Length: 145
Image (cartoon, rainbow, N blue to C red; front, side):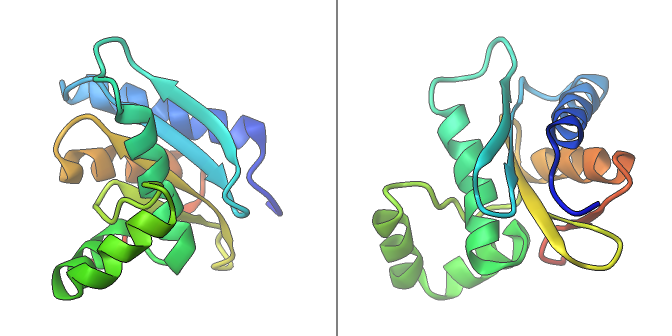
């Protein structure tokens, strides 16, 4: 696969939401971005709160901005809060360094895009994204443990 196609992005979004429902998580919102940071798919389940689309896109965009998953971003944000507050301000809020932001790679390690999920606790958001990315036959980079 050379790019994040609409078909693949749709599969990832649908599988993310399906996994959340299967696990009985709170209603989720999922954003799938291509490698250039452009939105391919955004889905918001009924019952999601108002700012969930922005949070999902911010989680995905943050991972693309640094090239690694939300877990590593969260670790770094804890160590350097002034830098990460500045990055959030510079990006007009489109930078959310939390688990639930997952880089999507092909089997050769090339970044195809990113997924951002929000609605439940960040670890559950991430679990749904990873499941969906793997279901699409791709590799999920969460930023480690």
